Length: 144
Image: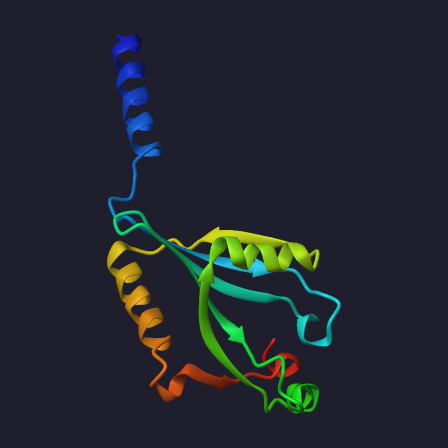
């Protein structure tokens, strides 16, 4: 009597513990450790989207800015620097952080497939160049 119950519970546990999300989209948060440059003192975060149905693996980076702005550090310190969202491959993103000897941790965001699709639509909306909301001001020492 105990054996069939054990086998049944083992089957239920095995099935539920390995159940896959039927959604082919995986969204995760990439958290980067602080660096030695002033602008990297507080670390950084970005979104990674993997869509296996459409063969997409892309990073949405909201912390992109113009390194060549002549008033870069003045604007940065005053919170006047314009940031914008940009995209890159995961390989390019990781390469940059490894080059500067900074760590990157990835954490999957546990949301429903519908929520993933809505978030992905919002991410794609934000990278449109014609949108004014592509650019934003962010003050590291006030917003962290």
